[in-house]
Length: 98
Image (cartoon, rainbow, N blue to C red; front, side, top):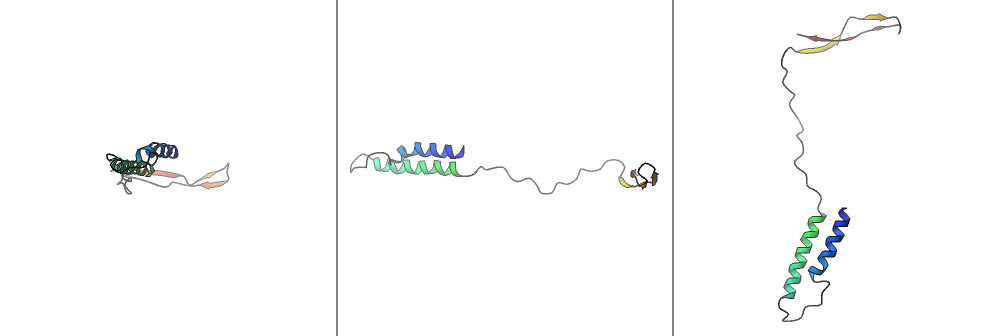
């Protein structure tokens, strides 16, 4: 899409820049100045089209954690038990809140 827009802008800018018109003659009423101004305008449009998209500022690197309301909790190993199906001791994780 970006290349298509660039080609269309270039095709529209060529007649404005004076490249596709007849050469300027002395005393032609300012056609040279109009060609220069048109060329500068076309260059500006092409420069804007060729530049990359601009996004907002980057997201913050560090965000403070939410404050903890209520009791403080942590995870620890619970009381081990024998799992007869698997044939091994199991140490479950238990949440402890104070």
